[in-house]
Amino acid sequence: MALDLPELNALGFAKPPSETRVVVAMSGGVDSSVVAAELAQAGFDVVGVTLQLYDHGAALAKKGACCAGRDIHDARRVAEEMGFPHYVLDYENVFKDAVIDEFADSYLAGATPVPCIRCNERVKFKDLLETAKDLDADCMATGHYIQRKMGAHGPELHSAADAARDQSYFLFSTTPEQLSFLRFPLGHLQSKAETRALAQRHGLSVADKPDSMDICFVPDGNYASVIEKLRPGAAEPGEIVHVDGRVLGTHDGVIHYTIGQRRGLGIGGLDEPLYVVKLDVEGRRVLVGPKEMLSTRVIPVREINWLGDGPFDGAGEHHLSVKVRSTRPPREAIVRPLSATTAEVELLTPEEGVSPGQACVFYDGSSSRVLGGGWIWRGD
Image (cartoon, rainbow, N blue to C red):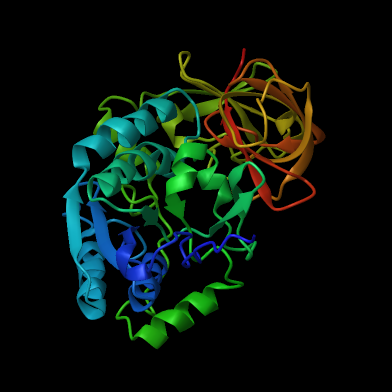
């Protein structure tokens, strides 16, 4: 006799939308606003939540930076337009402890951190997710461009249908437990134009709002000035040194440089193009050399979050595709586990400018599945 199984709603629950509560993480931008509007129109019990992550006084009217005062206003207005409750939660202290302080310390250590990943990992998908559960939500939805698909072993993470909008690099640390509670309604869309068309259809005031481009607490893109405010005295002067030992000039602080940088070194008049190949933080030296010195084949990776089937270190090496920067396409690689959370990644084709502090994200080379990833470190 065939079982009469209940039909699942659009969020995967066997009950009517009106009985399914979903907390929508609303940044005030068009993406999360469309998610909230679509779910509200579909009859779900929507609760909008916006996080105040930093003191946004100076950035109150700044366009192009998320989480600022205007964004909180925009999120509240969308909730009013669509008729669902909206709350603003003060997460400034949590954000400073979990994201900003590590960002500053990593930069001072010569790394190139990615604070948006830590924010997703430690704030949005940890504390906010727990808040959603406290609100008796069945799930939490966000406006990220990534897909959640059901696989043989449970929910899987997959790249967005639109490769140009894919945010999988920033979400690799999402755990299986978090993934079971999260929903990403925009991941299947083919373009941002579709999202804006949906916003227009709902009559949302944010339909034409520009995308956020900067890190929310660095609204002008000037990382060094933020570090100097957070860590007074951090910009100590030192020498710019060629890898052959020649002193080529001086600098106003290692924090002003990143691995792979060529422009703005302040050492003009040389015959050869030079790049930053290493930052000697303790010696306050910026080491420069030819471009070929930037090529890296073997990368040490730690703090690995594995989303594949079976234990990460249980089946020898993995032949995968990996991304070492958000703006670069995946490259073929051999990932050799050293433990459950550390590995050596060998790129089949060397990459330039691989920097400690960046993420190394793992992909199944034969599908859109995201298999996790970890953090690049020096290993020396």
